[in-house]
Image (tube, rainbow, N blue to C red):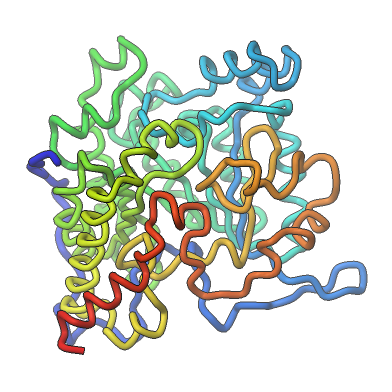
Length: 421
């Protein structure tokens, strides 16, 4: 476990003191999780009630990437090599879940929009873009933003935010300054920013998020760029609305390396009305390379201890109550409103395979071999997720793996004991 020295962006704290936080406040990104009363909502399709698919996680490779992959036989070593080389990301993160082997042709943009067109009549309200690479660095960004704006859909983008803080990167990918880039994306009020935040230690964050290109390395200090992006978005007011949180800190994955500094990150983020997500590694893509360390007893005990510290702080800070925690249960995101993506949606991989969620890429987690083969509504109705109607889904992708089976009971018991319950 490293000794990390976080140096945070210059963003003022805005969350009121305990006792003055408005009733109903929760730490959750807009439209990431859905309230209990929305479980089991239906919509009529072809004269039959269908449980709504409120959200969809989706990959958007971009047509340049699809072209480089699809010129080779689907699933071939050549196609996978082309994807690895060309998928379009300025970063080279060691645990990238998107580095899963492709089995089908990569999705073209027209196919991505066709999937969304099918999902909208099914009740779709939000999407999360998970790669491959950086949507903010892709030329297709503006078409994706316009589509979501036109159809009144919330779009959450997981981002390292380089083009929002570096003039060099913004000029490289879009021919404008990074401040102009921020202004342009802020013109879309339906856009959520899920910002990198694995560490704010200048030395270690630059190691955790290494840049691929040698020229980029010569021009970009990633920690400085990231802090600039946070500051600009906060200056624009993205974290000021206590009931519409559009800006999050994605402190993931939590590993042996950064676990010593993440409680401080959560505390900093919470005081600034930015939900902070603290999950262990995904069991997909290159996440498998660090999976072994995350299933060892030493790490899992450290992670459970972290969870206890987080929930104690969240309760003592007045963001939630012990009664709420007992009712809802703990969750591996730690301290935020529980994830219920399993209850409300699916994940579409870059090659059209449909998984229950992005957290696991093993065959047992696959819902459909290719979203292009049959209508999305049929895939949804036949999926395991369709049968789930729970507010707290736990984490089926990681339970018994990077999340220990005893996590939920043990953490709750220890938190209750701290408060004498």
